[in-house]
Image (cartoon, rainbow, N blue to C red; front, side):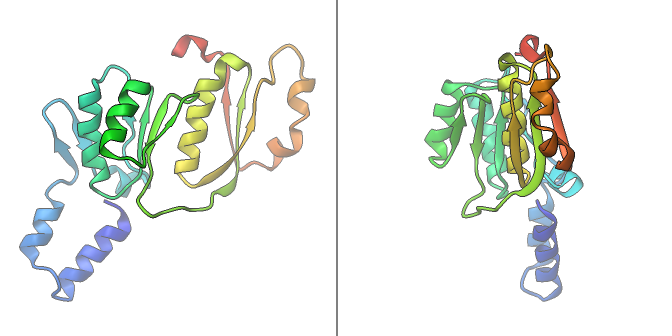
Length: 186
C-alpha cells in the first residue's frame, strides 16, 4: 500500500464513502501477509517508498508467482531478481505485460497503466564485463524507482584513463552505483 492509497482510504472513511469495517478488512494485510513459506511485506512501500523486491534465487517458480501475485494485487510494480527464463515464463503466464531482462537476470511486472519519466542523475559504473549482470540489476532497480540511469561499463582497473573519460557524468550524478569483482556473486 502506498501513502496515496492510505490517504484515499482514510478520506473515503471520513467522507462516508467507505464503511469502517471495509477499511479494516483492507488494512488487515498490513504490515505483512503470511503465505506459509514467505511473509509478503505490504508495508514496505509506506516505510521505504518502494515495494518489497522478490529475491528469486532458491525459490521455486510457484513460490515466486504466489509472492508476485500478492504484491501485484496491491498495484505496485513487481521486481524479481536473480532469476531465469523458467521463472519468467511462469510469471508471464499470469501477467503478460511482464518483461524479462536477461542481462540483469530480473523479471519486472510494471505498474498497470503507469509510465513515468525517470529523474536524471544516477550512474551505474562497472569495472569489467563479468560485472554487467549485477550492474544491470542495479539499473533495472533504479529505473523502477524512478531514476534515469547512465551506464558506464568496463572501466577496468588497469588504467584510470578508462574511468576518467566519463568524469563529467560521474561529477554531475546525484548517486553512483559502483560494481566491481562481482563474478563470484552469481
